[in-house]
Length: 388
Ligand SMILES: Cc1cc2nc3c(=O)[nH]c(=O)nc-3n(C[C@H](O)[C@H](O)[C@H](O)COP(=O)(O)OP(=O)(O)OC[C@H]3O[C@@H](n4cnc5c(N)ncnc54)[C@H](O)[C@@H]3O)c2cc1C
Image (cartoon, rainbow, N blue to C red; front, top):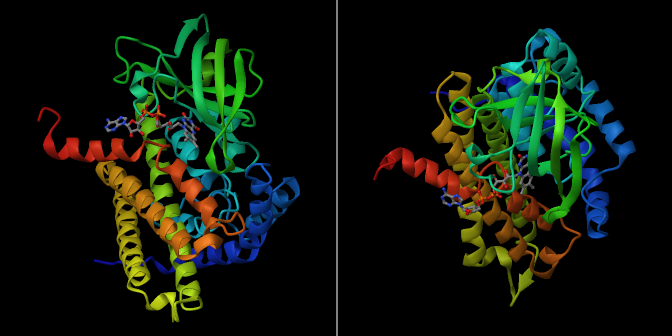
């Protein structure tokens, strides 16, 4: 049994750690200021372009993209290290291309779609979104009712999607729709590539979320999509969508470990300096137990996440592990960040420290890509059997 990252993956993790320290952390004060002023989460075009330049020059693009189109095709374990480091900062920056849609595209594209969508996406030229959730179907996507119907060579889509991140900006959205009502999730849901500006793809409103994030509601009104933009096999969209969701969930677990580690580091730095009633906070058992519990749970979450990624790389079925780490790591980090905020007292309540933004991010992470309770239900159902 080997619990260490391979040398080259550890070096990559260190490189990302340096990128975070030198490039992303210095931007945090500005990120916090903008968010506090109600301007949302962002870094501005100029800073974004600079980060793209630096990260590209460091070889940090396309880390898990196929080698034949310029990627490094790194395994999931290597990506966990990368995401853990990125999780340490609240500066919103994603190394192109974002892994979840990449994984879904890799699993489904044909030659034409590869050239038109996957390759520009890997080159960092396009932004994508995923449209699964609907007003009546979020945690249970099998309940979606958005319908795609064949019309000659094309597909015509009608329905409504909600909570869609990046829907207004994305160059294309991978849109999930029902193509066979009878079959539903078992052979009746398909994925489509819908380009920005397609008539009938109407982004009807931005929805401000906690922590400065924004999602969108999208109304699909006779949205006509050319036949070749059906992604993968008709009716078989659910499995690649689950692959996509699984990729995000592993990523989220790694981010949570990074965030919790940063919060713990902040407690450990601050607690010895702050004196109340004649003693430093680090001498108080309440704080010591938070530190010990945080270190223990971070260690557990990190090992669980690497274990899951390793099994994924071996081609094993990790549905259960993914539900476990998504729920455990996000809830763990939520608790650790909360304890860090408590340790800092009033300072922990300010918008000058990153802790409140970490808490807001984690608050949404406990919901998106499946709320905690649903993942626990999945684990329990698997152990107990669905009939008990
Ligand atoms: C910031 C953010 C970004 C998002 N981005 C996207 C996106 O880009 N694309 C997209 O398609 N969607 C996106 N979503 C939607 C997200 O994936 C869904 O909100 C999520 O899956 C939950 O669905 P729901 O809101 O309909 O909650 P519901 O499914 O209605 O669940 C509500 C609550 O009921 C409880 N519950 C439900 N089922 C069970 C169960 N079986 N057992 C126990 N308890 C249960 C849980 O506590 C749950 O929180 C985003 C959401 C957020 C918050």
